[in-house]
Amino acid sequence: MPFEKHLPGAAPTRRTPDDPASLKVVPVRHYARWVAAAAVLVLVAQFAHGLLTNPVWEWDVFRDYVLSETIVQAVWVTLQLTVYATMLGFLLGTVLAFMRLSQSPVLQTVAWTYIWIFRSIPMIVQLVFWFNLSALYKELGLGIPFGPVFWSVDSNSLIGTIGAAIIGLTLHQAAYAAEIVRGGVISVDRGQLEAAAALGIPRLRQIRRIVLPQAMRAILPTAGNEIIGLLKGTSVVYVMSIGELFYQAQVIYGRNGRVIPLLLVATAWYVVLTSLLSIAQHYVERRYARGTAAPKTLRALGGRR
Image (cartoon, rainbow, N blue to C red; front, side, top):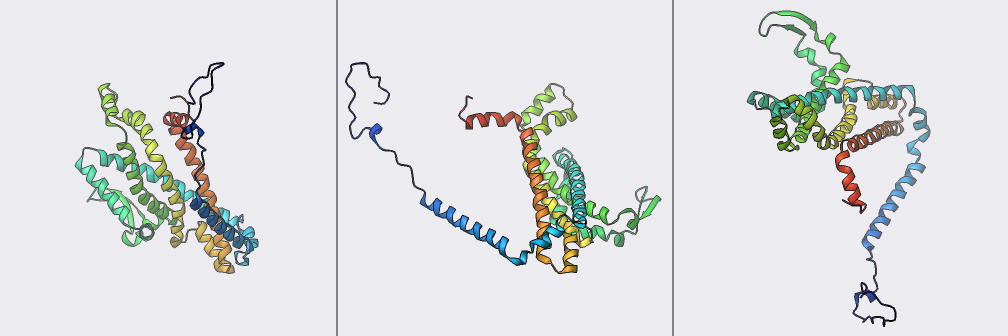
């Protein structure tokens, strides 16, 4: 047997044909996997060949516009809309999430109704509504509810085109952010909160130091996807004639008729921006998973537990 120790001078152990140690190990042949890989490589090669040789792509036009001043400014507007809507949306979404988790039925109902309404209405409808807010309210003011108004201002003066876009994107994003944050909070073991309460730790400090650091592990993957979706969703504001990336690409190919290369310019910038966000998401997730990633990595490498 393989584990037997042969003493000096002792006769070697005979191996029979049925001995497992004498059997020849043959690796499994994955023919279907090879065929599928070959078919995929052929399709990729065909696509790359057409991408490089098809004159309709007009790569010279792409090079002329991809770093042009108009496109770069449009990218900056897209980033501004994304940053403002992300920060304000997740701030409002966090408030809504804790309203849904509160013991007050009024707060629960208000938060649930908000999430239900804004997840039901398409983003483009919300943007057009906020863009035409002045048709519904000529003036916005401050005063006593159902009483006199002490200060008022014209709606168009207070909320411009960019402001209407940020409001629409923020309110839409907050509805989804609320459910993301709520899902992360309820994933934390409730026993930790009970232990913290038994130690006399204030409620706000429990949320800030115990709940949120652990909830971030569940929040970040979904939140990252939502932010990337918001970055691409800013293209919807073209209906408001805001000079973001997609709108400016439309304006340029409306003048020169080069539709395909200008769409390729917008696509390339979206790919670059989403790739950068994906890289940032990876490093942020790794930071918040410091307490759990190392043991899994060691077990995967065969290290000691």
